[in-house]
Image (cartoon, rainbow, N blue to C red; front, side, top):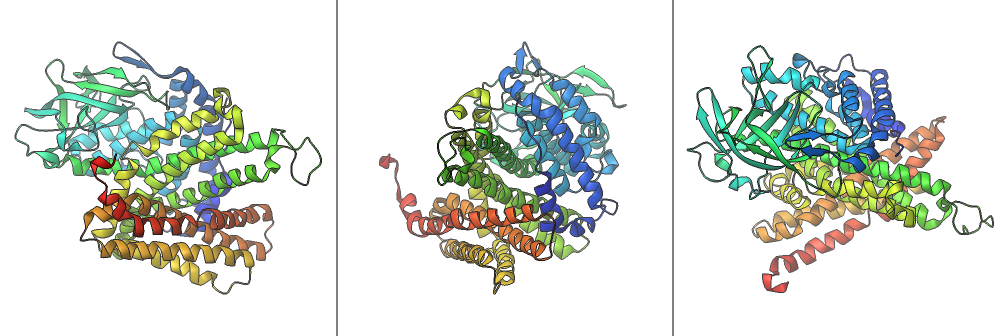
Length: 595
């Protein structure tokens, strides 16, 4: 069994001090959400995560979900766990009260969802996709769709999916072939979709599929895609369930990881056509689907961070108990491996980068809260730009780093990490998908360069850099030597980021260069954002220590993590700067014959 306990103290630090809970409380609709209530929510979530979900993580990995005929059975304990999850109201935490939601801001819901991801990623994928379906129907569906589906989805009584990919249409959705033929007040859907997370399962009575398809006269390419609600069971006008719809799961993928999450191949319309209902207008489906995609991309970035946190907890526990070799300067041969310098290095690589990723992820979530709930239109617009800018960074950078850190977790275990019984290998296997689904790292990088940097002439990224410089100004002249080390390293990374932004804008006439630089640019931006958050954390911690806090151990550790990150991680930005400025043309000039 894999143990997990949420890092509640660090979560609260990010929410209460780094973001500032007073800013959260000032959001529209958050008048009754105070710090005490937020802390209680986190405590309760940790109980479910540690006592119910974490014990099932290994069970799910071993058993997996099973398909017999067209019926999928989830692993032992899954249904009871889902019922506990649903009955405790966790499905509705951040949803609109109009549809039965609790109205919590996204940033608090993000902290809660981190616990589901860390304790049992396979389980967490089900509510993750449901949340995306809710957002799509809520923002783009008509009154009938909202009345029939939203309350049941918000409560968790039903779950939702996202159906994009087809055998011939992966990331390029312009080749989607699934057909939607008008038939009275609905459409008949025919086609096949692959990689559908929780496309079929036994947790709920109904599953609401959101499906991309083409109507008969639709234009070619992405401009001709529409979005449809296709329920597993048809829903009567009074909300009761009707006949089984013409859709079925024809197979489950056998995957490297997340075995308990049923990844389905779905067939629609084998008996003439699955009944589907148009969301919004025809031919605008891709735009609507991006409502789900953006939410999912932020969530997957959270997964990358969260599974690295779980891997770190396991590695730390092992390092604290494993006796091996002699520690330098310590004659006692019963010393545990946590005293070895290289083990300390690896553990702090994990700890510091997880803390950096958590802060960036929560900060991105808060920007979306500001964009939705702040009463000033200019603040809302700036927050939307910042959230849109950070989303590909959160998704691409956090998942790539998370994957590396789970590998470090295996390394700390040594040979035992390669043995499945320790659980270290499961975290590595489960994390691998995060860099792929909801858009690969390359797609996130292209989005960051094209839509989020070049399209607005660098406005959003320059606003971010300006805020980073405010932090640098606050750190100027501080007599604390450690803070100066952190500041100087962070200043270099900010300079590297600004240089590359200028380089990208100056190279905009040659799109090959921007494409070649994209991945390195994403990592440079992510590392620098993480450094910014840890620099701010160090400043706040130093103030607490000067004020005589009784929690010295926590704040000392925050400064240790920031210093380590500054000296061991931030220097990577200068190498990335060189690779971009001096190496992008090399990549662009490569021909097929080079391989």
